[in-house]
Amino acid sequence: MLSEAKRASVHAILLTDHHRPPKDFITDSWRGIREGVLFVPGSESRGFLIYPTKSIMGRMSDPTSAFIQAVRDDNGLIFLSHIEERPDHPMTDLDGLEIYNRHADLKKDKEGVATLILRLTDPASLAELEEDLRLYPDEILAAQQTYQADYLAKWDAETKSRRLTGVAANDCHHYMVLLVTMVDADHVRVGTNVDPEKDRRTIDATLRPGIKAMTKGHQPGDVLARIDLDPYSRSFRNASTHILASELSEAAIRQALRAGHAYVSHDWICDPTGFRFEAMSGPDNSSSALMGDDVTISPSLRLVAHFPVSCRIRLLRDGRVIEDHQGDNFDVAIKANGVYRVEGWITLDDEERPWIYSNPIYVHAAK
Image 1 (cartoon, rainbow, N blue to C red):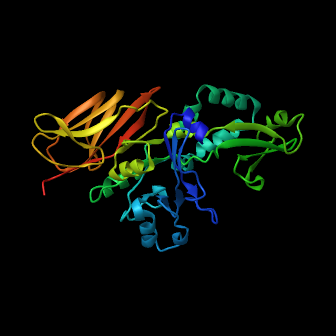
Image 2 (image 1 turned 135 degrees about the horizontal axis):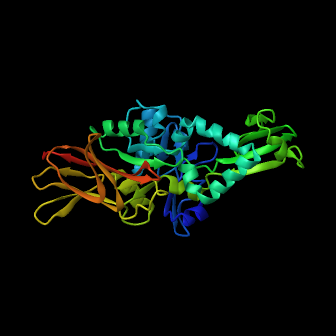
Image 3 (image 1 turned 90 degrees about the vertical axis):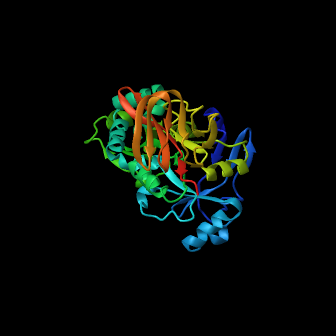
């Protein structure tokens, strides 16, 4: 992960190890800066991404409310994960939720997975896939990427009553290494590097005649093809959370995430560095709030966004689009309370794709 993070220019990795006792995902993990990359230990557990500041191994089976409190003690963070599996889960006492999850897109794409299996079991289509992956490595992995409307709808609905930070989950385990192994001259097994042999799919040469050419000259058990779709650097570019922290430290990262000073991006589309979304007001047009902040409505209040390249910009209020135009910036006077966030979309090869999702600015009346 460290070498791949450096390759992808990633400065911080917030780990989400699966909870596997007796390993302690806090004390038995990397923590701190190594070769310029900050590691923050955490876990994907019980439907959450959790980042306690100290070991909570004795609290992992607590009732949900007590478990959440144990995670959040002493500046810990907790985010709802896999929204497609728990769309109605309450957000009480949570710091935020995933607004994009790579694995959710994978699970929806049954046709794409079937197509990959077919391409792996014919010499000509396998060679073509290998060349496609050489030329377009990010695009092959990103072919399944969608606009996850169910995730965003929950976020928009819940932020009407509470502040919630949206984060990305690339859910990368480097588990999309596709393998074809020989059973006999007429049969192969297809699966991933994490599938037990018995769980891999057996394909017969009567269905895919090219299997005979693939197995010729090989022995049972030989690996006939290996396609690495998701090395960590590629997953890091696929979906990431950009954090506007004051410094590269765990404390600053936690503070910025809790405050919502962050945005989600599909970096493979375009480098989002320089994106800003902020509120400005007053005679000197001073910045009064960053994404994630609360701001009081005033006659001079404006929301301003800057993108590093021209794109389709959508400004949403309480989940509804109120501005939609092409450009690299916008400056909109705000006259109503609400939860405002912005999206950037880019057209690639005549296909429009979501690129950047800001965290909201919460506009309210003076108390």
